[in-house]
Length: 63
Image (cartoon, rainbow, N blue to C red; front, side, top):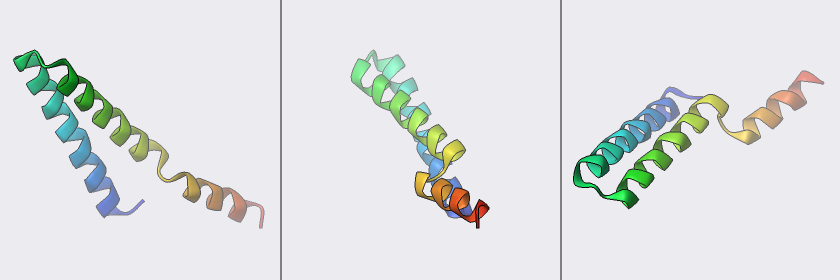
């Protein structure tokens, strides 16, 4: 995973935190949920990377 991708994931995670907090303050349930979704998506990308990359790494292991 490149540095650019990591930065994008972190930015998405921070945007999710902001949305969730704004949703808490304004009592806006859809915004709160959108923020939580953004955070979890960013975390999943950060830890898992691209599934295609995982497949390529597995393929290269057996070569």
